Amino acid sequence: MKIYLPENAKLIIDKLRNSGYSCYAVGGCVRDSLRGIQPHDWDFTTSAPPDEIERVFSEYRTIDVGKQYGTVAVLLGGELYEITTYRVDGEYSDLRHPDEVRFSDRIQDDLARRDFTVNAMAYNDYDGLVDLYGGGQDLSFGVIRCVGRPEERFSEDALRILRALRFASVLGFTIEPETSEAILKQRKLLGDIAAERIREELLKLLCGDKADFILRRYRKVIAVFIPELMGTFDFEQHSKHHNRDLYRHTVAAVHYVEPEPLLRVTMLFHDIGKPLAQTTDKNGMCHYKGHQKLGAAMTREILRRLCMPSVFIDEVCTLIRWHDERFKPETVMIKKYLKTLGADAMQKLMMVQRADILAQSAYMREEKLGNLTAVSEELNRIITSGECYSLRQLAVNGSDLLHIGVSSGITIGQTLDKLLDLVIEGELPNEKDALLAYAKNTIDKEQ
Ligand code: ATP
Ligand code: MG
Image 1 (cartoon, rainbow, N blue to C red):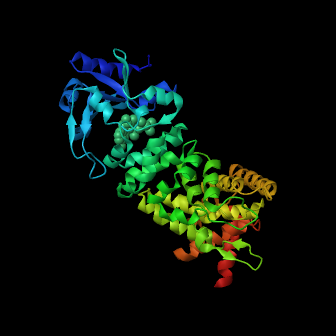
Image 2: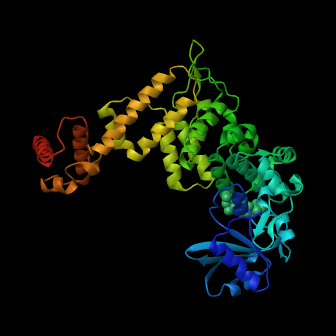
Image 3: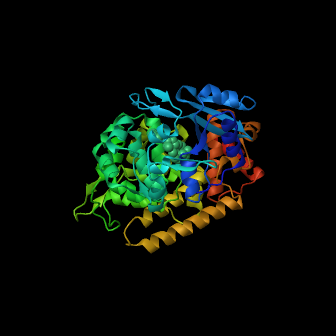
């Protein structure tokens, strides 16, 4: 079995070997190479202790990224490569790092501490593939299986529960029955895992090809750290627009949107406000007035708890707040929304709405999609045409108004806003003279 190693990888392995140590590419890069996918980074494992790694690469820049855990990064040709000493891990009682790491000089020890068989393979050109747990076979059958006894491995580090779901989602693999059973049985252990670690795995899981399947099959696991989702489980919507219960609709909407963290997270939470906002009319039909605002507020709490960056939170919450807005393909209306939300959010809203429609019943689907296409086309036309919808594009600014005698900051702001509305409504051309004349006239009248 031969894997193509880039020049820098060969150099790392050779330099350590020339100093009397063994070294292998390990983990994700070996897994991806065997799947015929170009690895996004290369990690190495070696018998050399951290001080020795630094010594061997003393002519290069090295960075201590976790020397106490055996990891030194080496900068080669502008890229960072992580090299970790073979180690045997103890328990993870702080749920982030093993309490005790023992360095070892045997590759077997290092592979034994790794999470799944497909991630526990090592390779160099001298020894070929080192696959002690049947990772190659699991890779070809598409199976996620713990190295060793699943229950033990999950109680050492419960993040592995979520990592199993992440790899199954991203790789489109099934989870081997014993591993799957342990995931469901021990899911509560995830409750103690640091939010930052959960966040990273969750975002990857959501962007996987099989996210929909995993989110359905393992919904109880997701609910350990997002209990708010439980309100959507088996929640009947009682509406012609829906043929799925709320959680299934949610998951279908996740599936139909592009695999971008922002969009996938938005879809996961877009209807989370519905159970609390539900009302029933005299015909037995249900309505969810205000679920957008409520959902945005709930989502803000959840994403804060998961330590998502605040810009990301704001963007998601804006999309959720407006996800159900009934846009029409009318220039003035779209420009008003552009003025409030900006071009980027509006374009993303189009994607959100499309995914939402696709996850609804067939009732009026063609009309809904047709309308959305018309709205998107008009939106894109406005954005590319350079027609004015924002203060930035307005032919006058604050200092122009100062010059004609508008003095207070508040009045300047209000006047600019009014002028922008008039331009958007087509009442005034976006030309400096016309706008200033109008502004002057208004001031004169007021004085
Ligand atoms: P990706 O392509 O997402 O980077 P990866 O397999 O490289 O996938 P990483 O999170 O970068 O995943 O971890 C690198 C390797 O370290 C894994 O392949 C696995 O062997 C090991 N590993 C990472 N986290 C754990 C863990 N919590 N428990 C055991 N082994 C782990
Ligand atoms: Mg990696």
